[in-house]
Length: 175
Image 1 (tube, rainbow, N blue to C red):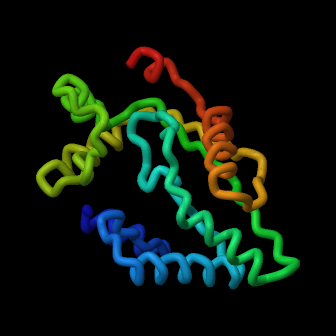
Image 2: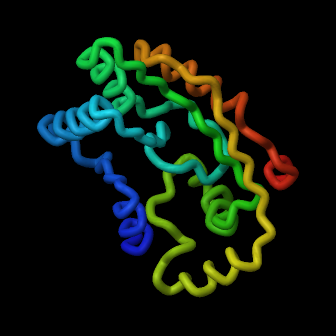
């Protein structure tokens, strides 16, 4: 939703899936596109929670629609080896903490935060300054590759893999 971030991500080859659009044709086109990308041997990154998780928690209900594309692509390309590799990226400081605390205190912690508070046009300079001064630790852990399988089973396997790979920093425990 932020034009600056969206432009950068699009230049990296990403596309946005509109979760609010429930038209069958739209969903079929997105699924077919994801399948063709995999069939042609390109790598794909999917956020199974449908976005990044700002609270560092593993979401209990993953969105697995695009991961079904891996199964379809593997069926269409006999002999092709497609793997799903879970990657957990954890960072020590949650820069959005101020907004997360407000949501928690207002009893709205269960709501998905839409937009990006850090990169709003009025806050961009302040946020960039905070990022520049930040002494940040980031932990990136790759899980064992998983073969595409039944989506219900895959959801459970991915959730378990993310929980095992998640790194808890002292700031998370304190929060």
